[in-house]
Figure (cartoon, protein in one colour):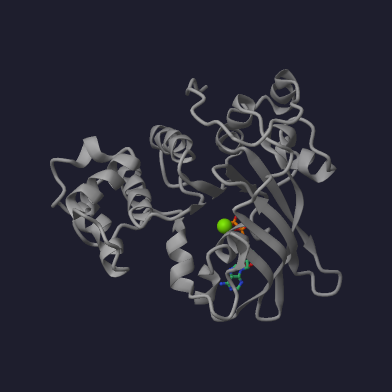
Length: 303
Ligand SMILES: Nc1ncnc2c1ncn2[C@@H]1O[C@H](COP(=O)(O)OP(=O)(O)OP(=O)(O)O)[C@@H](O)[C@H]1O
Ligand SMILES: [Mg+2]
């Protein structure tokens, strides 16, 4: 399906690799990213780690005891049935859940070994380093140029030339050629796929380390989706990406590692608490998952 070049290399020592044909055979999915370069079974020096993460909305225990490591310059996909807590976990990774008053987070989220929930940590700074792209493109009601320039201005980022900075961000999001002649026009005049790339450009304009994406292609057609997937492949050189997706093919195509979540009903209340079932190299998850629940889900028998 894709014939993208293998642009990403890792400095981590390669461990044993699996047979690619096994990966293809299991569910017939193309396993793109992990097949092209060899990664260690676990991220060696993870840029982020969630440890003992439990999340509550009021009394409702939404996510139970999640432990996950995110490798630098890797793409990690979070998959699983609706309501299993993928977005909740993703939002914990840059303290976006702070904005939900009923939400309580227990455990640690370490970013470069600093707990982002530490008492002295400023959530605004956290979100500067760990940016987010949402499901629905949400440009500001401003010009294309101002959508990009706004973030750096607000955080007082020192740039030599804002024009150059805007161009760099738009080039980084593979949008420059399409918008360079209409920078002063409203962002609302762009197509959905262009708006989503503008939102990615807006995110990278403040030079984060990590980009969180919550179903970034769910509102896009296959061509726009393919452009975003190509873009993610390019962005991996400079960024760490964590993506929630319902699209199995997308997870298999773009990610290096995949975390499969499911939800387990509470015996007394019947409320469904999300939990992490399995986290591994994408190639392994889509070829020989350890857990029957993962196999059932990715082969379409559940969810
Ligand atoms: N703001 C909130 N207040 C109360 N409960 C919430 C809130 N956000 C999510 N939940 C609940 O937490 C659980 C996990 O929701 P979450 O949105 O993280 O799931 P998800 O895996 O992202 O689902 P989907 O695939 O449908 O987007 C669900 O039961 C949901 O109803
Ligand atoms: Mg969600």
